[in-house]
Length: 262
Ligand SMILES: [Zn+2]
Image (cartoon, rainbow, N blue to C red; front, side):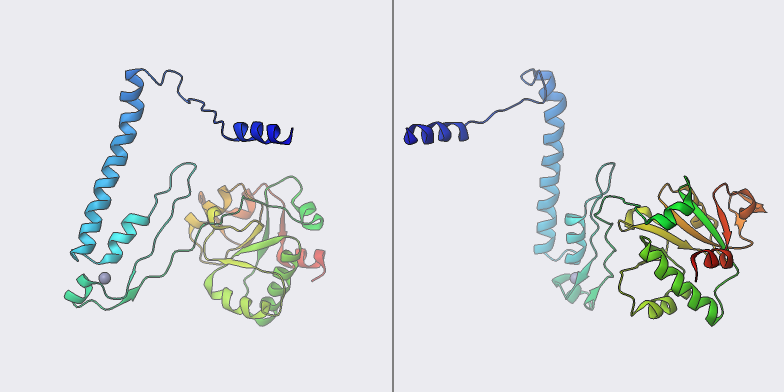
């Protein structure tokens, strides 16, 4: 009985079901139009790989250039792509041409996490139904303002906002202030959705700011808290203040700090 059962199980496991993705896969037209083009691409890639391998063997250029070409994957719709940074400790070509060992800065990888904008109840309530809210400030030049900003960022982190887009001038000071703080904060120089970690985002803009950067931030659909200079101009109409045309909830910096008890 047991043996028969094992026998049937083995037969079942060895079974394979093949489901053709193209209904008329036996017709010549399908092979010519669908399969041949894929084979051509694969064939050219094989030739190019072979050329690169020969180039490496004969030191035709720096070996790093060949590896960058071989391992880079361009991004396209539905695919993130992979970028490769070059470094060489002294290949044949570099030695022959007097090149010194070098290592280029690795590019920051895109965030592998699915986008997520969850946040705690108190802050979520301030957004009402909008994707962003704006807080207008008068700058963060003096010590007191910098200290308040540190407390505010801590509060935001507890509320689920952990991506922080911040100008480099403010970043180091803030990083120092946050050192004893337990929750991770992810710092960014520019707002680029692909790099955001799976948290909500705060964007601190100070004067002068680039209109292109501001436009990108405003056009996004992710949840974000914007800290904007009081008099910042609308990037699409520099004659008017952004504050006068925003349709989201807006606050003055001190007003919002009072609301949350900082
Ligand atoms: Zn080299």
